[in-house]
Image (cartoon, rainbow, N blue to C red; front, side, top):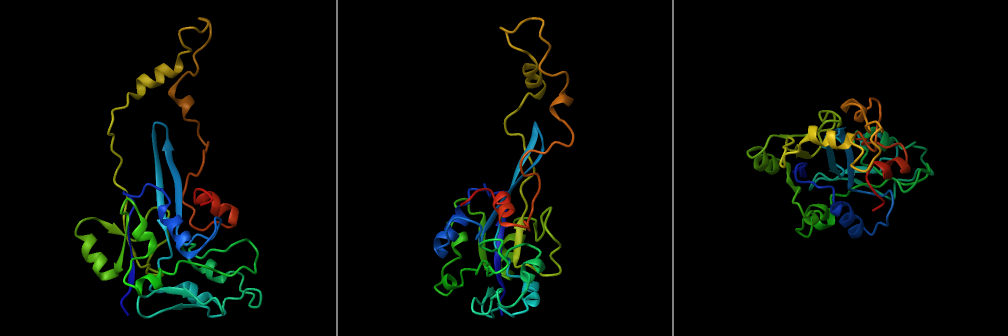
Length: 259
């Protein structure tokens, strides 16, 4: 078996969700929580040092798929030609086999998704677009990415191609250790932050403190010091990567919008 997998360049990803929407369109999936390709978005830092992060993640079709081992119905298989991890819909029947979503619990990446929070929902996941591979085509997410942040092919060729150009990894901050499952992916982490346009922070602070030319002269400044703009313990929006949301509502929140 030749293990196929993905290359993902986080520095090129802009979170546009084209990959996720193309995947839904190709597979005839309506808007909602069934997302074979999930696009996570989270923020880091405090103004003026703020950074927005993106991570587009399908199933990584691990060389050691613990989801398959955990499934009591043996509904998850690893096929031989591409190394794709697939769910046999005929055997996946939570209404009969009380599995308590054992496959999802086992997967460290949360790549198995469900249409609702009902315990009887069947598991679904990325199929590696195996029907497209058989036609000599790339997975739809890779083919649709406008920023060319994704690539696909035999893992040995991807490693040879990209490890010469970049420092690649299988684990970004917030992701689990890869050794247990050996995910079929290599990742180029985002580039370090660079200040492209000079931003006079001290001057901005001073302008913000002022009430303006038409305010009463006895009014105090808007704030007293820079520390007033950086309150501790205050979180705004999504401030971390959550690969395994515990409900449909959480999944929709952490993967941006209802695409």
